[in-house]
Length: 393
Image 1 (cartoon, helix red, strand yellow):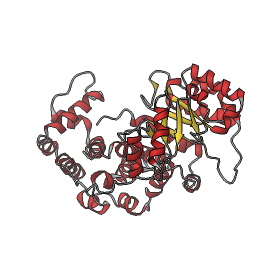
Image 2 (cartoon, rainbow, N blue to C red):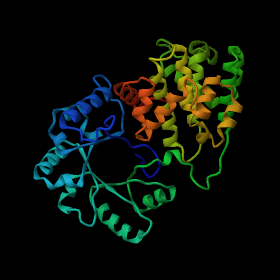
Image 3 (cartoon, helix red, strand yellow):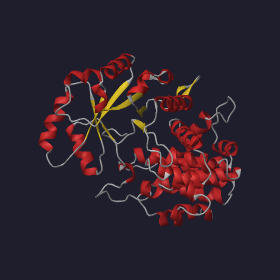
Image 4 (cartoon, helix red, strand yellow):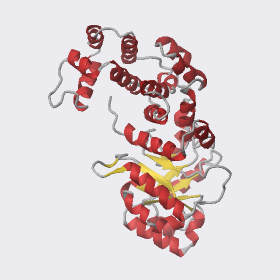
């Protein structure tokens, strides 16, 4: 979920049943799912692993009174109900009790013209559907809601034109797939100077050039040198003592971790105004793809999987074609196959990660083809979401 600046403010989890079973999930099943999410994202020592992000969970009335919700942090949890659920007085009472405990409540499928205004103090979000056919009427309708404490969520926002219109009308959050869609009229920027040096360093690492040559290249970009020293000290490589020498930092880090760090840095060095959510998606996809393959591929394939996942969005981040990306830096053939056609040994893992991002019905078949259990897909995805919150290359 994005805000008007295209930054990620939270994530939405929906529940899919496998196969042809179209029955709604029971309260017992939902309780198990919420318990699973809580166990993956709430750490006894570190607390909420998504930091300041909010998690939106599809809910039904029976879920509102389950004990599983007690394991979720109320200030970071929003339960999404359908408008028809509000017909029950018991549901409204349960909803009010959760709001008193600081849980968020979002309402889907509501007609704002007919929505009971008495319920506005009991909800925190309401989904609205934008239509470009009658913008003035929608502006009046949204303006009335702006005077309440309810935040408006645009869903689905399918084009950048609609996104801009919704932002101007005062909507607070947006659900859609715009982070994978280039803005019309935004000209590709290509590589900036920092990214050019990063790519040169990656080529040098792949050729196993000596530390002295890597150090000389790093010194050409003081900001890059600073980031490496900051990273090496934050990660604790110096065992309690501050590392101030680039040569010492490179020696401590090693070629494999250095290449991985450069991959992260390349994706996050974009100055493109449309890239905050795209950068985060690339980081999550890289980690998710790596975790999906860990149980099936040799340990030395982990870095290749991570790079494959990250690089699968690099063409959009850099504003160049994937072919140009591949001409800029030599990559192993399995990585190239995955990036160009989702083929080879790594391609299916990237395809599965993409399907999960889009909440596609292909998730089940793709996971089955790779012999990955739904439990492991979900665990890897939540782990990747949490991991991405603490990345500062």
